[in-house]
Image (cartoon, rainbow, N blue to C red):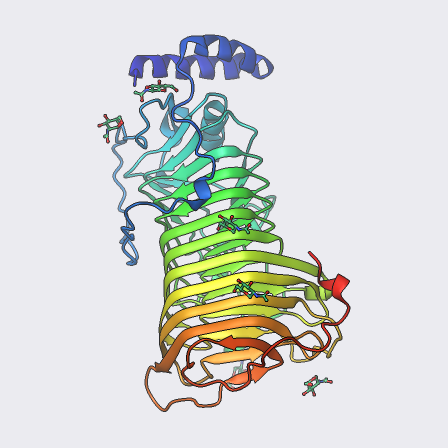
Length: 481
Ligand SMILES: *[C@@H]1O[C@H](CO)[C@@H](O)[C@H](O)[C@H]1NC(C)=O
Ligand SMILES: *[C@@H]1O[C@H](CO)[C@@H](O)[C@H](O)[C@H]1NC(C)=O
Ligand SMILES: *[C@@H]1O[C@H](CO)[C@@H](O)[C@H](O)[C@H]1NC(C)=O
Ligand SMILES: *[C@@H]1O[C@H](CO)[C@@H](O)[C@H](O)[C@H]1NC(C)=O
Ligand SMILES: *[C@@H]1O[C@H](CO)[C@@H](O)[C@H](O)[C@H]1NC(C)=O
Ligand SMILES: *[C@@H]1O[C@H](CO)[C@@H](O)[C@H](O)[C@H]1NC(C)=O
């Protein structure tokens, strides 16, 4: 890459930004006239190409990064021989001493990089940057990269959170297309003070839970965006969900390491909702809630070579809350390891919902000391006071193949609690063999109103899967998606 060209462009951009923000686009493009166009042709379906080498990142929590005041440069950007300009946040005034508020510098670097093709916002290594809740919005030129090689973190807890900022989210990427979030660095969530709020479960005086509001920020949120790649980063100690995708299409997640303590409340690893065409590969997730959770409006999701634990497992739902219509289809989870978790593979729906969950496949899953290894819960309820209702989200075409390992005997390893009124249909079980991690075999798996086949003998044996289809499936139109 031509460094001088890059610095020149940087200079021009900065000057133009200062001079006249509205005029930047046209003039900037003039300067870029001779610049080479895009790199490789866009991959038509990036979400479905698992990385060739499943070199999982280490699950260990990285040690304190240590602060080295010498700015390091140049950092290597991701190797993309046609990458154009690198916008170091430090060139825009970011200090990176772990306490200065660098938000304004990040916003300026983003603004500049957003305007060039293949622009890179670079957060250099060996520095610790603190920024407040920020929405990095597009549209931007294609190929934008946000590369964190150092440490990026939010203010330390609710008391330091600016009152005017949203306390529901921190880093937000909005309205972007063809964007990459990567780097060798760490997104440190500083979650401890949020987890300890007395409104969190059993964190009040004497183990009580004080009434809310109890909002805590999701660490990273992608909203209304498409063709996203998120790779390489360590993301840890989120106040709430680590990573959330909402209203997105075309998401490739590869080689992430996500970690928070086992007892950190509500710290889902990766949550997706209303999002289609998602690949999640080669990642290691340990936290205090769902490892991966899939909400309504998701389809065509492929999860491979993911290790979860400790966690609450991989979860579809909860769906159908407040009598809502929920649709989830075509979800595949393959070659996963789930260990020391409260659930393994879970589908949970509230009573009274409509819609369906269909074409779900769980294959080659290794369990280690997991409660509820395989669970369908259509009576999901947080209060125990949920009334029985006559509709439910319809579950069909769910396959469990080669699910092996050990369970925690405190709960049965297999639990199919399908709705009274809307049976689950076409559940296929093949090579499901689960043994106690320690203690005595549980020989009474729970199974209610479920139809399907066992292609091999399930261990522990279940005797309730019924052949064929139920006589009624309720009013079918309710379950259309
Ligand atoms: C840069 O991209 C162009 C076309 O987009 C291609 O012809 C060229 O070989 C690329 N350069 C390098 C060094 O990869
Ligand atoms: C970057 O890619 C180019 C072209 O593919 C290659 O020649 C070069 O060795 C790579 N550099 C690094 C540091 O991997
Ligand atoms: C906590 O429990 C102790 C002993 O039961 C009691 O004396 C104390 O008042 C309780 N504190 C609060 C804040 O409820
Ligand atoms: C299911 O999703 C996968 C991606 O995970 C996709 O390749 C496939 O075409 C989808 N199948 C259907 C029937 O849509
Ligand atoms: C709901 O239905 C279940 C199963 O039929 C039954 O055991 C339970 O008592 C019912 N609960 C209420 C509140 O009606
Ligand atoms: C049952 O589900 C499997 C996928 O698990 C699907 O291939 C098959 O077509 C379904 N059978 C029926 C009768 O719908």
